Length: 333
Length: 289
Ligand SMILES: Nc1ncnc2c1ncn2[C@@H]1O[C@H](COP(=O)(O)OP(=O)(O)O)[C@@H](O)[C@H]1O
Ligand code: SF4
Ligand SMILES: [Mg+2]
Image (cartoon, rainbow over all chains, first blue to last red):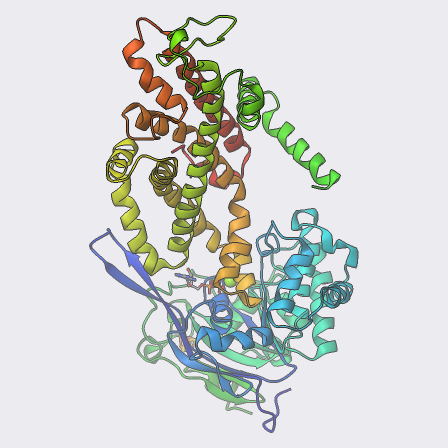
């Protein structure tokens, strides 16, 4: 997908989002720093869907929330369409809000219960001045609702009148109505019934293909990611440990953590034992030195315990942040 | 109001008061008080301010249902006009408390730095008992309806601020607020379009309690000679004036006293019923004022 001639739509370099946690009593004021995102870099080409996977708590959501400026970045840069956006003031960032949209996980919590669907969907249209007359706004809402597979008549209703799947469609309509360039979907189908997941996932995929938007698809579910993404980045404790085109990642994973994740998806041969014991992930509040994965890694050696591995280019768009990445696969193809 | 909305209101009312006989009686009493206040000039047999030296301290009877006071003024007529004052004081205090307190609480929860300072001020004010705070403020100010309303409103603005502070803190972490921000909503829109509408029912409950307690505060201030100007026919002033004649003319104490107690009690019952009907998330935030 990515060709070097194309300028990436989104270029993230060494992104860091640290949270300061106040621990202890009112006056003791001991502060702990939780490095939720700690040096994440990636490119996203126009029209590309990049998956971000990893266990719960590894910082996936925080990456998405930082790129939508819901959280403040502690360091690093993010260029959107060539413009550095993390250092923009909130006011200067406002026009970019139209271009960068987010689909939230919980379809029950992400719609204001007091507003009708029309009120919710008209908000971004009015704020960004996409339509001026009330009639035009309603028309646009109707069009978008049809696009996401809902009857335009529903716009006068309140969220509690809808099922989870329908609400998520409304959430998707709120995103699509402003015709964004980048959509960040954070566990967009994880809260839905399995029977509904496929429908909503297909809708997202269809809308993405039709409109050619770029997408950051965040999920802990590799099965879902496999369905929709062109390329996948695997996160562990606030860092990306492996990036690869989808086919490569699933057929020839390089990083031991990726292999662990793949081994843990339920699949055709359920009797097969996972390659390694699946230990508890270490805490982002106290990450281990060296390679953060070393306490759980069967291949760990001395260097792993002391030095942080940098991403190694394995060719064909595959990168792996592991000291032994090259060796395992034979030299990079 | 469209017929549809009226039906909806009616249904909501039924849901709240169903099976609650005391609260329903309380509501009925309040409706009476409001009617008395609105139609006072049509109801009263005498001018509430008219002095009749011949009829001083007349016992309750056919001519004067509630008797007369030491100036010969008709206690019934004064009681009816007293309902007006009760409503004015109650509504006025509610408006002041909700506006000042509500805004302070919401803004403090939303802008955390400013909020830390504002809520500290609120805490200091809350350290004083409500009546003491009202007394101190009223001794500085002139006796008038306006000042009484302001002072009682400010006193209850503190509790309102605390309550709204807590509720806004909860609401601002809701995902739909993040979604609104992503849609481009600014601070004002988030506060007043997304947060405030979710606070309407708890605010209504809070209002009913303030309305009730404002009556007690106003009566206490009147009784101490610090509230409404003495010539104003309020229940509190009537009570205050009755003191000297309490053995010779106990009705002067009885009627305004009963009116105050009934009204406060009714408003509390209605407030309780409302509180039990709202979003369970906020139930613990409102514990009365
Ligand atoms: N606002 C916050 N304040 C403090 N810690 C946070 C905040 N948001 C997330 N975290 C912490 O950051 C880590 C990463 O969280 P998150 O990005 O939600 O992970 P994921 O989406 O991969 O499950 C977790 O340990 C989480 O507890
Ligand atoms: S660097 Fe070492 S510990 Fe880390 S994943 Fe690679 S082999 Fe395992
Ligand atoms: Mg998450």
